[in-house]
Length: 370
Image (cartoon, rainbow, N blue to C red):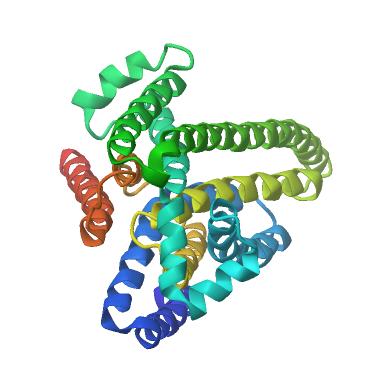
């Protein structure tokens, strides 16, 4: 079962790692591996959410999500989006960005380095909003209770996460501005760039959240209608002496589910792409690593649906969001200071590992108590 579900992910992993070695040697293999783990770590909760919704859809719409959806996720967000973000920030055409990445790596690296402050500010704010909205929400299950309980109380204040994110952005822009002013030259206007890019990241997060909320509301309305129709069908079946059976959602409800899943998947893959800029600026390695990670997320979604065990490791979602928070701060720090790529990648791995181990211990304690 496990081997069958993950066979395509294993095949893509082997091809991706081999391509990394051929592209830039053994160092590239390490970076591709770290990016793959980063993508899986950041998107694990996405797989859980996808599986929870996907299991309620009929077989046709499950196939649509796992075929059309993976094409959008892998080729759209993981491969095309990194090209677009570099092209926009460096004022290049997408083809020019790809051409430079493949033929003139030094020039491409120079352009990406010049654009890095805006990329880091944009991504740092987007990731920080995901983290803040998570920790300020009151949840039944808490991983670090001593920290999450007071934060949940603070979260009752409206728009607190936006205010904190803006304060962090202002501090980052001011600090970088002072640093740039001391050095003068072409970087003297970078403080304004950081501020504008950070605000753009904040707006992007709010737009994605608004779209998700819109589709979720439409989904709930359609589900109510489907449930009413299902209840009527069951009553008719009972009157006719036939046993009623649960109906998988189809039609409009399944369509809105599909749209909602795509918006969610885009937002989660977006943070993976932005987080990848904290690991490497090489667009080829980024595409290889994120593509491998996306395949594992897809396989994990299928596995969770087929096994029906979504709540075994309850702290993993917490660990993934703490990793997002750490990456947001790292991106903002890299506006001015260089941070080793290995350290950056391992932060997420350590947090995910700690949350997994805590989940295992919790499960053992519950079994012992029963």
